[in-house]
Image 1 (cartoon, rainbow, N blue to C red):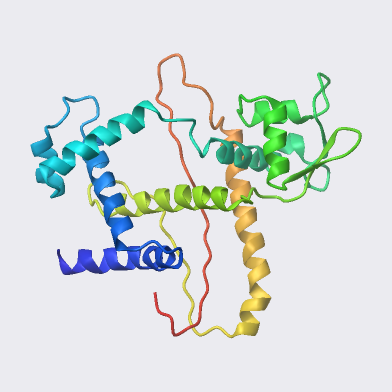
Image 2 (tube, rainbow, N blue to C red):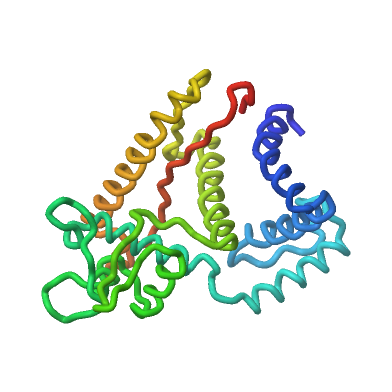
Length: 273
């Protein structure tokens, strides 16, 4: 392996390896999973083209043909029994909350999220109209239950919904892992895309400081959180204004998806990245 590539892979994998060891998952478990992913990605590269032979997959992955055949059969069975996207509920809830805190129709005079009725046909904003604005085609009851489960909304005796937090953050360990996987996966895809000199780069920016005192960090951390929230709200508002998530046009314009993220990390100064 090229030395620069090895350095990159080491830095990408090291935090994951530390986490897996804390969870009691050793090398064998990761090795078996890597084999599956190698075969699945080799199959996925061909899309609608004629499926590659086991020998071709073995050549590109370095996995012997007998193992490729077994893993290929496993992959086919997994596709046939694929259940509902496990991220569907998380993505839906996050989009509803983002619209609630960004779209002017759902903000009061001071710019804070309105209290919403669960339903209604009148001109007053309500949860049904919020779902339409967020382009969420799911029953209101299902979405409300998801938001209540995550501790994002509170419902009073008069069926008024109160937003408790201005951002969707998953509550259960499972949802946290799914959220992490989706965000970091797209961030990594963006960074790897930017290694191609022939492609227009995606946004990849980071602010780095070293040697900041603990008291300084305590003082500035809340402001950084507010700045990040404000930026994401403004970005979502801009997308809503421009018709984000609109259906494909009659001309067959393809749909796109995007993820714009902000992350923050701090550690002791001697712990270099």
